[in-house]
Image 1 (tube, rainbow, N blue to C red):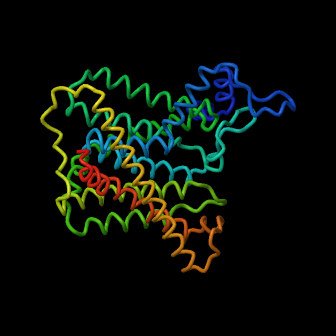
Image 2: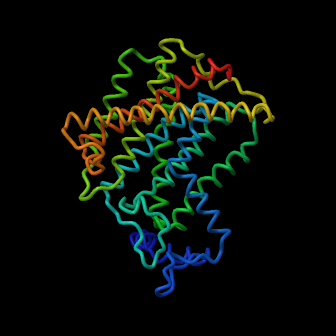
Image 3: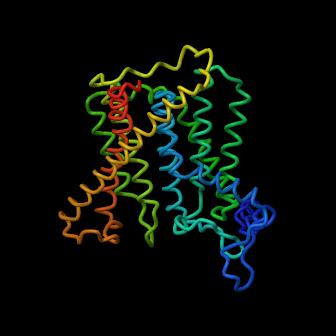
Length: 354
């Protein structure tokens, strides 16, 4: 068994997968970063890799909330936050290296400083796709086999893309999937509690702020700087902001409460041109407001922290200091989460988009 697990961690397996998909290292002193001989696989897996990155989730999750179903978006965000936190912390505790290069060709540079086990891309894709499947199968009427196929294809493509891009071994990917399955099974009985968070006591926002901030500030220490702590703070803060946003909506009765999971909605409404235009308009309005809030709060929080700790303004290295990085990111993305769930729907209503 140990030999099997060790073989799955072998970089040679990843390199052979890349070669079979037409991705090769540069020849000699050609100056090329890599050689692509099969562009179908190249664009397929590059696109699939993007589906597991933050840019997808910060667009997909708000779009789901504003245009599809707040009930679903709330569950997706909370499970995504839990899975990503466990994955990020596990990486920095285990400290398993990524595949070695050579023989592997690495297509991504930003996360090279991070450790490999488990693959958080695989974890996020598995969590999002199967949480969506489980949460909709008793809410909307559609062929279960179709939903299951889409969940498997989505998560499968993201998992394979992590091998193709050379960022993870087979064991990293399998570990990420298995950890996610375990977390979904473990937390599923408590999912109904997630649906009641907005009716919690007035002390709920305090707990939602204090606990994630404590976890971020006490994140496992690494021997060198990597973006994992910053990414984890962003994720936990966004989740905290979303939870507080739902609580604000309920406590102050700002928006109507999302419908319960039952009864079953008989048919998914057909996509029309008017619905598409309305959805895109709501999405653009929401994203613009979020970007404005993000930039404003980020600049303000950095200025306050720089002044407090007497740091030179625009010092990029200072941003990486624990006492600056965690507070400014936490405040910024908590504000983003609150804005997405509270102020954007209010703006939609003001503009007559609801």
